[in-house]
View (cartoon, rainbow, N blue to C red):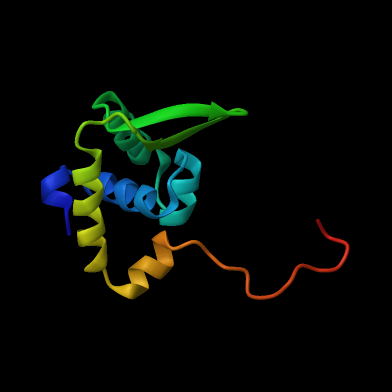
Length: 110
């Protein structure tokens, strides 16, 4: 949908994922979208170099999130929220919305 504006489908995926989930890392995106890790890492790197995202280490994992100091963050998020509304619900459920556990864990399992 926004691929022509952002210059790639991976940037669109990263933006929508971060809009809903706030933080992510490359391996997580690879599993969610079931695709190669390298293009997703390049998209994350490009967005970080542009100042739109920031990364930090949590243990050995490099997490990414929107840069709170990015001057157009408020406008970018408003634009993304509007675009997200037009995504089909199946796509939202499959890729972006957090999975909710439907049944309780087995007793004694932590």
